Image 1 (cartoon, rainbow, N blue to C red):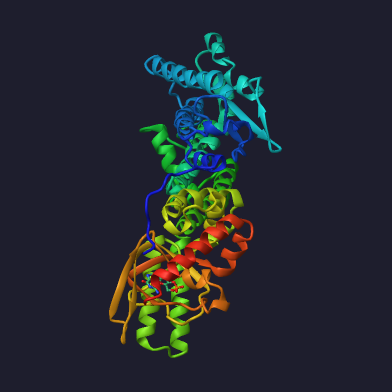
Image 2 (image 1 turned 45 degrees about the vertical axis):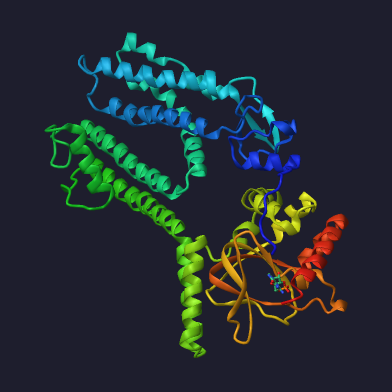
Length: 484
Ligand SMILES: Nc1nc2c(ncn2[C@@H]2O[C@@H]3COP(=O)(O)O[C@H]3[C@H]2O)c(=O)[nH]1
């Protein structure tokens, strides 16, 4: 029986590279050609450092930089507007300012010089620190010695916003459920818009004079909290606010309502898109299944067939989280598809006795043409006497080679990693060999890789040696099975 047996794994250098490329922590040292690696990111680690692909460490560091940036972007306006600078608070402000600055200095002096950039496809080594980074570091804070402590001198720190977006993009790219971060980030934008509005309301109140009218903040309680409460009611158009009296108040309030309508509706729309995108796969699955069920009803398909179709949909969705893997992979460049196919299946294919002695690259070519298909319990995958147009490799589950008057005799059960359906493919039609030599049915749910005859032969044209190996094995297999 053709089944998986162990074999020595010989990796061609490009496959070693592809493996390393997919798993950032594995460095393709053997290839010695790291310089030629096609890097997909705009900003990349210096390829000469010991861990050129250690992206996660950089993302972790960027998280720290993002915290420092957020400290500045949230507290600079609050400190600028509200009376929160006093003898009791100032030591804390100074401490946290220094901490945030330390993070930025380490980033600019230590981390950023280790990165390279991709410009027009070329990897560009950066030797000078970028101007914006340096400007963001200028310690205007020292002016506080003359003018008093004020966050206005820290406004240049906000220039570092690009690092927040970089953190966000990189985090998304490494998260399994990126939509969680997207929801958090959009919520952050909403809260920040309210935060800035609270500051503006306080400034407006100061401008009018605290407690001078019904509309302005009256100076009681926690100033920030009261102003934030106003911002929430005003920007989210909840209403119930004191009626603005003066032209200034009316204008301010109108601006708030307009900003609320446009900004908030677009942010809330963004949130809906994020959640919609996160569940798009499931929505597509449900829509496909519903469409198919209604088609079957319209055509009065028997109930038991309908049930089988439904079971197929549900099992395929549960097993692979999508209906057609190839839809996803088809959109990728060849090198990526190869990297994924090699990583997932090459080891399995190398162990298959039928393919031992075949060219490694031929196996890789074959992996790229495989299609995944699910059979339900009891389904016939091949029927004796049919013309063989495909061969199969069992991904998971099992199939049985059956025979006898009512197919009740089980000759053999084939499990994951086994090949079947190859005999009729490898025998020429003139020998009468292109017909299936046995019935094969799914035993339980069987997830199979299918390789079409045409694809197999297209590949073999380029590998005459492998073609001979397979033809020899094909004949041997026929001799073995001819009794059935
Ligand atoms: N005839 C036969 N086929 C078997 C046996 N075990 C597995 N098979 C597979 O069952 C497949 C039926 O279709 P093919 O003839 O194309 O190829 C056959 C073999 O790959 C066996 O014992 N006898």
